[in-house]
Length: 99
Image (tube, rainbow, N blue to C red; front, top):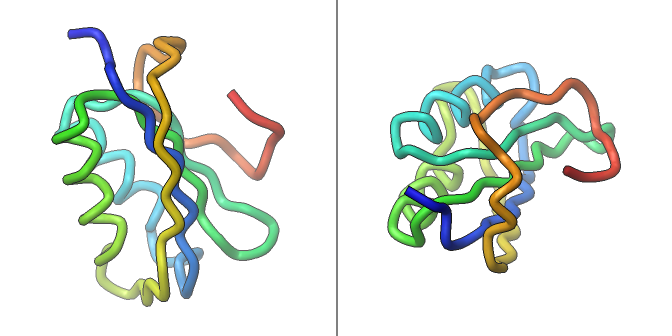
């Protein structure tokens, strides 16, 4: 299935040191999404995911809750068309400039 939409999400709160990135990977893979997740130096978690709008909305709902131990204050979300450049969903170490 070709991804149709792209979600870029930045999660604010106590989201580092609680397994948040691996929670996102498990959730995204279960939903059939591709993309990545990474910690930012600011203490936030950033994720880029591509797939169906329905699956991305489900991921966004999960991001708003987070794993046990997380305290999500808010999630900033931006939508755009999928680029189709990803083949899997993985963790990226540290913040980087983009795809």
